[in-house]
Length: 304
Image (cartoon, rainbow, N blue to C red; front, top):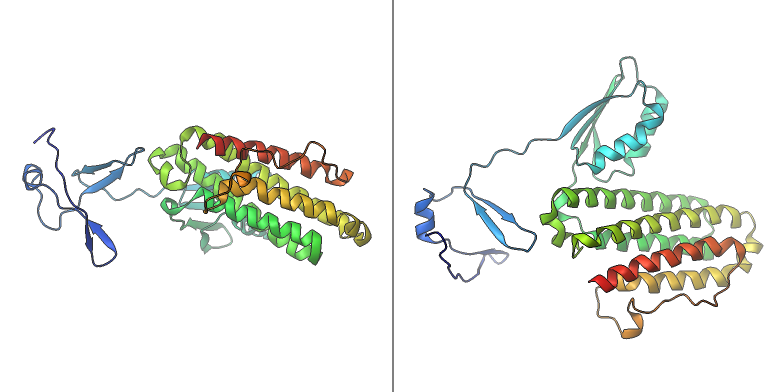
């Protein structure tokens, strides 16, 4: 049977699932019978490979970390383990966990989507990552980041609320770390690339840089809010420039995150930032980040 080619029609089963029949000769060759389980693996070019080998239970990726000498390194360490796909993380101490350490772990977990505390005592904290990695879509995450940044612009223009700025900044950080976890997964499992929304492995660097630029823009908008909210008259004077920067930001990201067909003037081929554009001094760094975001967005758009 090796080398034979078969044609099969796709059947709709139960109104929601699709099925194809398997060649009878192949079933017999592999000693398969009704209700046996086979593994279906999707390749990078969207082909499917059937594997009749015994399916072993997935090994849970777990790790235990003593924090006695890691107080200043807990955040980068936990985020690194999260990016690497660890599903169970235990933080423990030989003495007793301080209140500060417990609060720090909880604060870090706000950036680790799908992570919960399964057990906690005076000596240890057990965390479990419940995230379904296969369903993650990078474009959806970039869209969410862009929406949060839009809200940060709105905070400057309308609400002037410190609490809303902090809430939006935390949400931006959470999605950014989730994005990094997804990229780490794609590097380990390239077969998931197509379902992630990234067309080619060569596009990973500009996507990574784009997400980082968005996170930096959020930081700058938060810092600007702290300055302008103390001087609402200055905030009012900057309103026109801030609104213009918000409109430019939307036009830059639209070709990457939009699900509708764009008009030629909406595509990523032409710069949305005029060389003659002048803004107030405290907004120049935001303009510079927008220029960097546009560069990465153009690379992605032109490489599709």
